[in-house]
Image 1 (cartoon, rainbow, N blue to C red):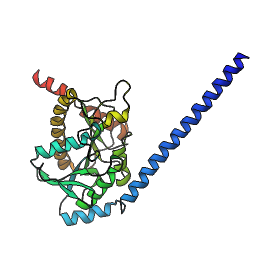
Image 2 (tube, one colour):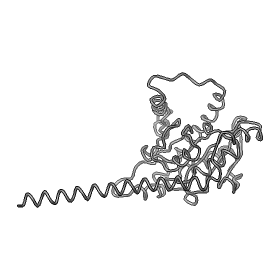
Image 3 (tube, rainbow, N blue to C red):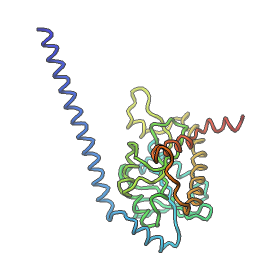
Image 4 (cartoon, one colour):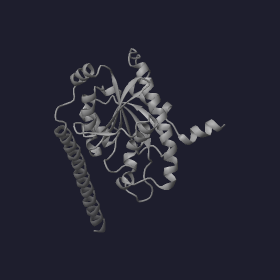
Length: 279
């Protein structure tokens, strides 16, 4: 009798878990669908290459754009570290006092130059989940192709102190990047991923990413900002020198394998870099 009761309890528990996960999956799917709908509604007209052609003729030149993904009013938090890096880049370029609001793109913009290359710096003024609306509108207005948009964002799966370039591909669960992919209708945008690490103990992921860096973390972040700005400037220069080059032949393992190799090769640790410089 006791075995039957135990079997019944286990069966009920399994059914409960099954129903729970079904509801969770449905909730996540509905949330993602709702975000896509909001992206489409806010993006008054779909992004298309034709807009870029018209903008290029108007602007008389090809432009590149660096975007600091984040939440407005939450600068200084881990989730908005992309905005912090973008601010450091503006300081390095000597244009930090030139931010201006742009109602059309729902963001703040600086027009600058890096080695005779026109560069747009963009801070979206929309929530992270719909940052892509601002990015797509800015790309259309300022004549920037998707492959010339460099997204700077936080990365949970890398520890604080690690940064890496990712050349296109999936959003890897990052809502801001997913919004950009959805609105631009492509995933070719390169990204600078800034490691923030996963939470320890009982701290939830939401609380971790929306929290501010600790005093000790800030010391590491200061070094990360220097490294990130240098890498951004290097990427802008490399892209400029390669923009008219023919595409390379497909490497061994295909595009996905090549992306992983490039990401590992470009992974940077400020601590390791400084140690190497001293040796």
